[in-house]
Amino acid sequence: MAWMDAVTQTVTGLGYDLVEVERSAGGTLRVTIDMPWPAAGGAPVTVEDCERVTRQLQYVLEVEGVEYKRLEVASPGIDRPLRHEQDFERFVGEVVDLTLKAPIADAAAPGMAANRKKFRGTLEKAEAGGWQIVWSDEPEVKPGVRVSKKREKAPLQVMGFTLDELKETRLAPIVDFKGKKPRNQD
Image 1 (tube, rainbow, N blue to C red):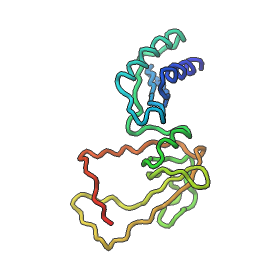
Image 2: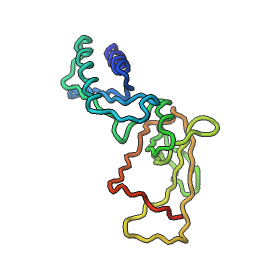
Image 3: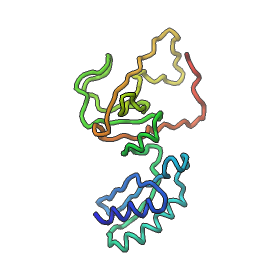
Image 4: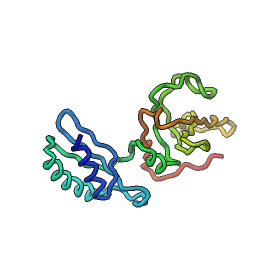
């Protein structure tokens, strides 16, 4: 696809990272961009950034003869997909939603369901190389419910993985509308 190469070159040439390109059956061409890492230092993509890329892509797609009804250029949002090694490096320590291509055949730890494919936990770099996710199957405490201080916490579980084993990984969309941090209950 020559047009895909043109989109990639245009986006990277303007100083952005190309996260994703989707083409819908209805004729929408959706391009997702992000600021380069670590150069941007976590700066978000602005409307002006999307506008700049849109204008440039309109010219490039016309030259390439690409047919589309609508062009959308957007930031990756709070549930940003992680696809490349660099994405995983960038988001070490963040909570991610991870889906494996194939389910785990055996329960890796007591209390963990066999044939599980989906996990939510903290992304970490494994000591032996590769990646791991750390999570606890502790049930979420509902507002207004008191939790006994004597109650034992669920143990942390760890699962190592390689990027080849993943179907999809995204940043977990965790939003705190109140802006309050939970008190440390240790």
